[in-house]
Length: 369
Image 1 (cartoon, one colour):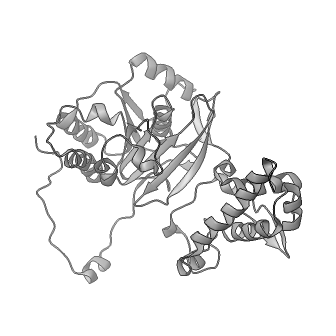
Image 2: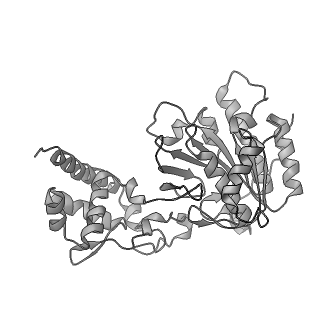
Image 3: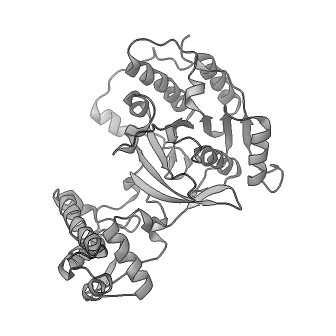
C-alpha cells in the first residue's frame, strides 16, 4: 500500500542563493529545545519506565505544562498505548490528572491498526486534529507489524521508519516511537536499540533511557539533528508517578563528581584544599579544576573555585543555534564555543586529566599510593 505521504513528489534542485533567500518557517516544537517536529525514537529496557515517560510527555503537551524542565507547547496530543488496556490507561491517567482531564487535550487509545493501514489511519486522524503537537506510539514494534519483509533487514527498518518520519514532517508534529533496547550492553547507547541502524538512521532524534532495576534514578541520553547531544539525570517522583529532573552531578566522571561534591560540602576552595580533602595529587586536582571551570562547571576567582549556580547542571542545555558563539562564554549553555572550535585536542586533554584524577582517587580509596 502506498504511503499516505506522496513519495513521488520531488522538488527540483535550487541554487544556494535561492535557498538562502527563502523565508522558511521556524522549527516547530512539541517541547521547547527537547522534542522537535519529526520522528523521535525513545528506547529503553523493558519495564524501565519509558511508557511513563512517553505518557508524561503527551500529558504535558495536552495540558501545556512542563516536561523535564522545559515548556511544552500546548496542543492536541495522541497516546497510542498498544501494550495497555483501558483500565491501565485510566489508572495511570488518574495519577496525572486532578481535574478529571477537563483541561487536557490528550487523546488516548489502546487499539490501532498496524503497518500501512496504521499510517493511513494516523494520517486521517491528524487531518481531523490540525493542532496536534505530539503523537506517542507505544510500541513501535507492534505499530510496524503487518508489513511485508524482504531479505534486506536494514532497508526494511529504514523504509518503515522513513514512512513514519514522512508523516510527521507532512503534518509538522513530533512522533515519539517507543522501542526496546537489547540485553547486551553497548558503548554507544544508539547501538543498544532493537533493530538495525536503519531505525536510528531515519530518526530525527533518539532518546535512550537507562535505569537499573528497582532504582529511582535514571539517565536519559539524547542525540538528534536539531537538538544538542546531552545526558540528563532523571529521578522518579513517586507521589506524581512521573519522571522529573534529577541531580546531573551524578552523571559526571568520578573525578569531577567528587570535586563538585566536595565544593558543595565545604564551599569555595583552592585546588590545594580539594587535594587535601580528597587525598589526591595537587597537580592533578589543579588541572582538572581548570578544565571544569572552562566547561562552566566551576567558577574561579583568584585561584579559588566554587559552583556557579547549584541548579545550572539540572537544566538541559538549549541548542547551539540559540547560543551566541561570538563571546568567550555562552550565557545559555555555559560553553566556550570559540575555544572548543579552535582546539581539537582539548577533548583528549580533558580525558587524560580526568583519567589521572580518577585513577588517583580510585587507587587511594583502595589504600594504594
